[in-house]
Length: 563
Image (tube, rainbow, N blue to C red; front, side):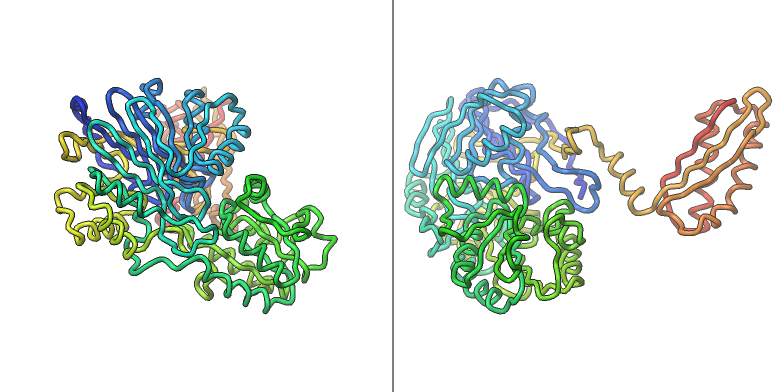
């Protein structure tokens, strides 16, 4: 999933009184959301999230936005405003605060509670936070910020209206227009309309479902499908969803009560987040329904529902370990039912289907989005976006949060409602947009590549190293060890050739040994004594052989020992 970006073209200085908008993630991809607003010498950051790795990024835990574009100006950042508590919007906050720990963080009650637990994990203390709610207006440096309620797949989501002398920007964050939400909190279209009447100069809109016709299904429609899955199960039920999907967990708790079952949370992030949601009153747990996930062995499987992490096939998450029979407390057996109550994030399909296959092989019945209505999207479909464009009537539109096809579909919707084509800005991460004198335009680019988190290392893994890892995973490696007498220019021992992940029978390697010996003898006879040069001789010899004989390209690790 490595991305190539156009070459940066340094933007000009921002015109006096202008507003600069620079997405550093989340535009042209789903995840890593981060947008920087600049005005009057100050910066405002909206969201700071992570992207999760795909199969072609082995060993990577998280992918961060590239902070280089603002690293030299961190003292100018007046706040980080968070639209909601999903990882792709808050997961990188601790990494930015590592670089300047006193940046104020603004967000709703639940969002900041999720962030607080992350800050504790990163040992970040005394970070200033500002809890806000819909309708609040606050001044952060030269930016006036108004928060607007929006409905999403997590409670307490907010849109952000940003006012400066350059104009008004309305950023929807992630949203949809569920008219019957489980918590009764709908997207505030009256506020959208009021802002539209006042004049929205630039409208940043969620694009994730822009290519889906109609309106997103209401969350309430999932309840009958959950009831059917519960009623048909004679064994244990496992429901996998995002650890932040409070609404879905509430539906599972309510279904468990209706079907006479108890519930246990499986997965550290699930336990943590649901405890926070319950403490703050966003999750209502009926008396007696919750049991300790560490003591599920004390209960009959047919009496239990396990709410688990791992709905995206993450290798170390609870559900993947269940599918691989490596979970320390849960063994999937014939008669169990597993419900994947989430969508497939683009890029995760292969990993998810591997988990489904593993669970099926163990005898479980797997219920998922493809065969039952057990998940609805948290994002507005085309009909909802059209409605919003007609309500807001923005001067300019900049589709955000989505892959390229989603951005283009969203742009087409904006044009269909009458936004002039030259005022619909199709940009990607790193593009710099200036709003000056009522006109918005792309004025340049900044670097915004992927920053990889590998264990405790941030930014140390390069694309070249990832390519080496992919080769090791897909093609294996061949090691060649030889000892030489540098004085006489003769081979003392070897070459010894070994392989891993290349051939099951090491005997196939025997035919390359004479070739290596001949190539080394020739090089030594020509006076070559430098170990690095001799290693290159061995690498070329093995590379030509393995390519010609086996059509493979394993990693080749030559070692020359001098006596």
